[in-house]
Image 1 (cartoon, rainbow, N blue to C red):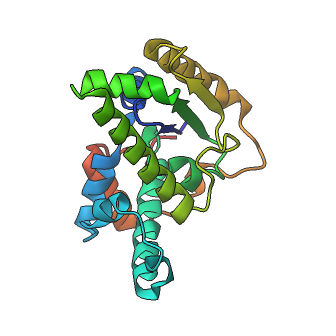
Image 2: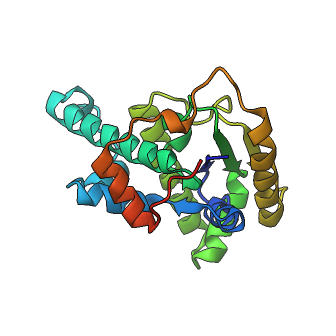
Length: 222
């Protein structure tokens, strides 16, 4: 197995589960902070701001603004692909499931839970009132949904893009991590032969070196 992408709903324990999977498998853990670091090296320091701010109705028709966002999204895709080319990585969020959807050696996982469960978790973890937690979950859901649907034209609620979907309200985080790890091991022997692997990615040399340096690993894993 080369890469695991993990898409998660806010409050589904996805971050902790992704870290546990990476640690157990000895994989690199790649998240928003890591990708932001690489983008920053290339001058895309405003990406997180763009991500957090939904495009207005008129901005959708602003050719210059749309071009700017398309360029940033293209750079994000190239970073995700460079990480996948490096191999042995768990990629958390950033639409990794869509960017790497056509590769045979990538396992795509979705972690989710009912809204009320996620609100309760956020309320407890961040010491918020129920109303504050509810507002935060709704806002975060809206941002993530808008990013996927606006930039990749993929329905946020679609399950067809994922190989494994886990409801963490019923499956404890340790068990969910165990399922992902087991699926990754089994998946190696059941890859689709008609699809290319991440070894075929034509990653930019300088970008590949930047990713390797940030991962503190110069070995390409296959």
